[in-house]
Amino acid sequence: MSKEVSFKESQIIRITLLLLGMGFLASVVPTISLPLFLFNALLALIAGALFYYFWKTTKHQSKRYFSLLSYVMINVLAIYFTIPLLRMYFLTMTFWIGVVMLIIMIVLPYFFSR
Image (cartoon, rainbow, N blue to C red; front, top):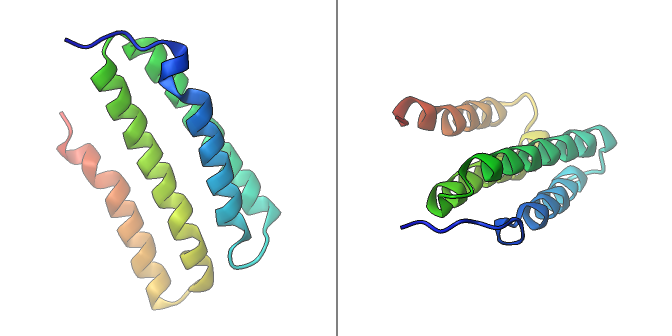
């Protein structure tokens, strides 16, 4: 049986701060970019809002909550980790292959979910 997740156990603030830090690191490789940092920060804040929504709606089902939290976190990290590579290979064949792979990785789970 699933137990209730308290706000402290939900790790919403910790993971949102982690995503903000990773977004900062992704925006300074290979060169510093303020617009990219703002985009990454906005993405982390949207993920934080999703974490709060998931906690409010599924806090009585801990397995479901942590599954949704992990899913959003992995998708955001996938975007963060590909940004530096896409910036280095901008408008080459490698860039377009990377963009297509990223879109497939994010969209494909929606087709196979219930």
